Length: 382
Image (cartoon, rainbow, N blue to C red):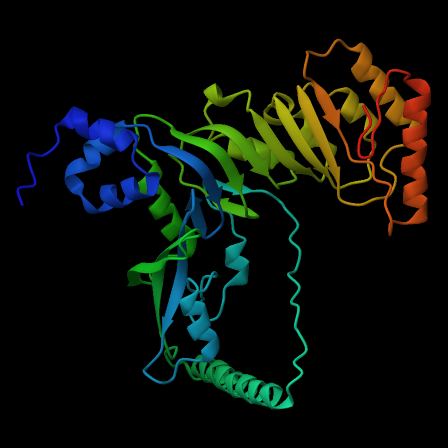
């Protein structure tokens, strides 16, 4: 079959403009002839997620990890699982042990969100069949023995000055959330640290572009983000779990001024100082998850956002009843534009603590008493 003549330069740019961003990235990496055209066409991404060891573009995730290669028949079950799911997330020291202090080390271009992490909790179901439980216990004990044997072998190697019992590689895994497809596409000798590997990947994808990368929704998802210095983004919305004012400043350095005001910002609040940041104050729609018992009324009175939505992480009193009335009077009398709104859940429900329900009922009663034009229903009052 005759493939026909190649696309002209201008036609190629038009095709790239409407191409899926991940397919476009693959073509850019594998087809040197299109690279000059690809770099001048704006790259448009619906959702960009950033983590300390992976980036996700729409539904496709690019993960860097350490692959441990043991001699045939000696790989511990734990390492097999790690290799299968993207490799180890932490760098190794010279003896092959995980270098946890190095994971928290900041490098030029890194963003420290200062977020407090929560330990994951595992849930196990009780098995009724005794035989199945016994077989499972045997398998788990066998795996534990093999894992412990590998740990001891590594310890003896360190004690005796011997090489570690495995070879290490940096592995790039590309996976798709929708199709469940997962490919290990590249292995290189472990000679650089994982943040450097991720920086190299981001450099290849995002840097040296004529236009900023257009991102509809940006989601930073890690305590420390290893960003490439040449990254420039034009974003519309951001979901931000970082709790420090400095983190807003650090990530703002990668965002073009033309992005502001953002359509929407969602943020967790660990300290009231972040409300002073332009990125948050200027957003058209602000969604705040409150985590803190500081004085909220002055913060709410000074919000300039067209729409504000407050979500509490606990159900105790967040403000006195009188403060709620002051806040409502402020919104009613301050001449807000049509469509402006302030939303905050107040729940009266079965199973909640009696004190919490009583407090929320008092707020509802005061609203109905002081604001004759308020309208209430089964699940709302405004």
